[in-house]
Image (cartoon, rainbow, N blue to C red):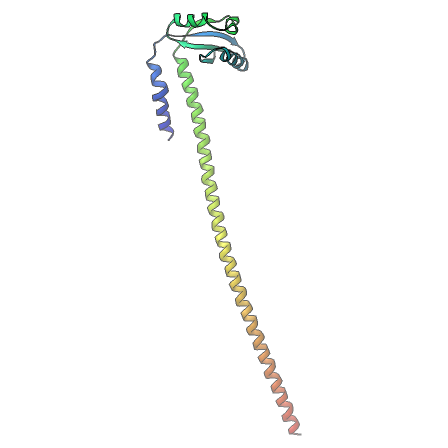
Length: 191
């Protein structure tokens, strides 16, 4: 399943990026030293713009927030000129960005999907283990029922044996008493 999903992602996300022109422009709105600050800037941009905003980590470990992706410089300039006051206050500029940003985004998404797949695999394993445990519990319950039935049967047999022993003891007592009576009569008659 994993390989098919990766092939699907490649076909949908990566392959079209090879068809793009080599030059892509974006509006660099702000650069910060922390990812949290970059995300705050991104949220503020999204409040005032309908375009995509994204954060990119730079080589010096700073974070740049970009607005939009444009195929021409003029298209980016037009959007910048019509941008909100918040964006203009950040002293934005148009920057040519590389196609590898798209590839990095896709790689990040693939990593996220891989992590989701790993989590799902763990859940499947847990479900399988739970099913095995449930089957074991059911087997043990069946054995318990059989053991209970065997115990009851054994108790009935033990009860039956006790009753037979009681009857045999009573018969033995009765025979003993009759012999004693008979012996005492014959002793009385023989005197």
